Length: 215
Image (cartoon, rainbow, N blue to C red; front, side, top):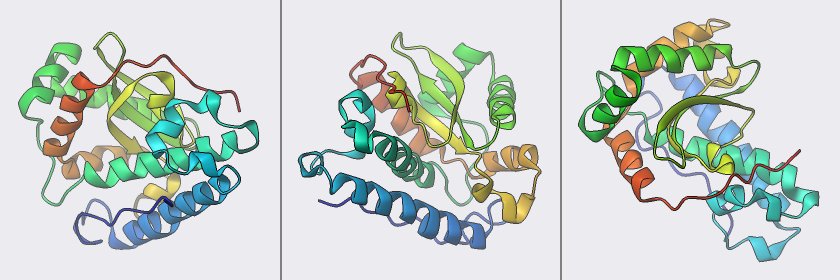
């Protein structure tokens, strides 16, 4: 089956004033739509891969035929990253984390404010386009990392729990070149219930060796 763009779980204007409606239309419909279209086009060349999920493709990049590996890495990554991104945001979200993810953040980083500073710093210092992430490593520890372009941490054997998009298309219409301002505002829309679900999933996920292929 062809990969599809999932519908937003809320209205395009639901994240105002922190993320504007015009940005959400462009980001979800145009950018995410393009990643899915390009991923499907690449997989047409290798029909045997069409029944695999995008996560499976990224987890095993080295097994992807070389002629489409770059397209799968970039567009499959864009699809997986954004499918997560829409879910971990909601209207009237934000505030301090709760539940098990709050306990894990405090244990790993000292407190939420320290974690938030570290996460925002990773996003602000990511040169060019990319993502800032909270991941769980193969030892079960939480880490803050950044990745370039649409690279997803699962290709490195890591489980992405939380990620923020720092491509300019995610914020430029509202924040222009003020990426740190966008990063700070984004915490007002975080859906901690969904993040807790992802954290629970990370504790049950199989451990995979890093499979990051060269471009």
